[in-house]
Amino acid sequence: MTNSETKATLSFSDGTPSVDFPIYKGTVGPDVIDIRKLYAGTGKFTYDPGFMSTAACNSTITYIDGDKGELLYRGYPIEQLAVNCDFLETCYLLLNGELPDTTQNKKFSDTVTKHTMVHEQMQFFFRGFRRDAHPMAVLVGTVGALSSFYHDSLDITDPHHREVSAIRLIAKLPTLVAMAYKYNVGQPFVYPRNDLSYSANFMRMMFSTPCEEYKSNDVLVRALDRILILHADHEQNASTSTVRLAGSSGANPFACIAAGIACLWGPAHGGANEAALNMLKEIGTVDKIPEFIKQVKDKNSGVKLMGFGHRVYKNFDPRAKLMRETCYEVLEELGLQDDPLFKLAMALEKIALEDEYFVSRKLYPNVDFYSGIVQSALGIPVSLFTGIFAMARTVGWIAQWNEMISDPEQKIGRPRQLYIGSPSRNVKPLAERG
Image 1 (cartoon, helix red, strand yellow):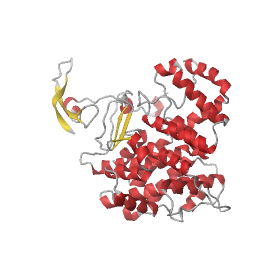
Image 2 (tube, rainbow, N blue to C red; image 1 turned 90 degrees about the horizontal axis):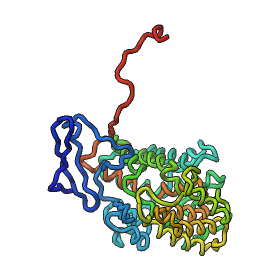
Image 3 (cartoon, rainbow, N blue to C red; image 1 turned 30 degrees about the horizontal axis):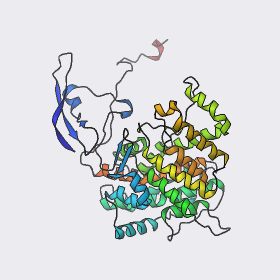
Image 4 (spheres, helix red, strand yellow; image 1 turned 120 degrees about the vertical axis):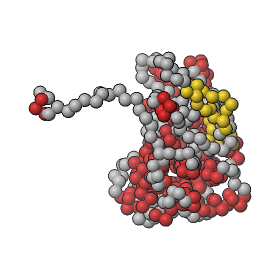
């Protein structure tokens, strides 16, 4: 970031002297006002619930322009990455700042692939969970437990240790997600194979059984790979901010990623695609859409259109167009165009794209609407949707964590508050309290 030629001046109506603050410019996007000396100079804090107007860090990883519908990973448009790269190339980019060349790509892919196994003792952790435990509960526990196996790479001040931890997390998340699924359905765990790609390996660990040889479908593998790319990072969202906040205390990377998974579990964050698919199931059939749309338009009904619109993107979600293409490819490949649930989804999509009520409010289908449909078509249960999200976002979390650890300006996170409770008062003896 660079200094702006202008400064921000804060003046007070009560006669308190005005204070100047430096303004910094980023590569793109809005300028920021550096208020770090606000409290020391004025005795006052800012008040910003949800941190909607606060930059808590500087970053070189991801940029979003919600008005333009733009998402960049290290400067590259998401539309180009999703078409021209696979997930591990995207991981390399997020971790290292540049796309890999042929040699770097092979070395990185081989390294990740050879770390996909988890310690055999991990299976005993799973036995401690109920069979019907939510996969996210299982992931929070097992990812945090990884730190107990890798004391050799927990020095967060050592760049090599951070690199080793990053590889381990990216490599082992698919294995743990697949194990959570297998444990839930009562099937044996499937070990990873080094001759398969990242996404193909995950599909095999999810859906193969000892009864017969598993045959991967390139269209479905590519669809999963695209889901992972589109969800790999998304600037300073709630779970990423959680990872950074946990990391600012010096916590090990496995604990920080477990904290991110816990935050992602919330329905307002990672559960959006699950909510969108549940909405479709509640509507039931195409003929019930008009009544549903009527309820959505009624502000007093409490009925919401899930999977449409986005808090950040005030225009079309750039990931949605790519996911829509993938959605139609998968439905065609599996012959599901006439499946009642998917016909319902496509009918709802058509209405939302044409109805003036939704168009004027820019409530376009977002990435969650389509990714939920695709994952359902792939055979992934709704309860595991957020687990897939966590698998994709792990690389973004670890890249953000590593950037934070390396930032000389970083301090332990300590937000302030506007206290509105009781002022100081004295404690009365019990007998005097009535």
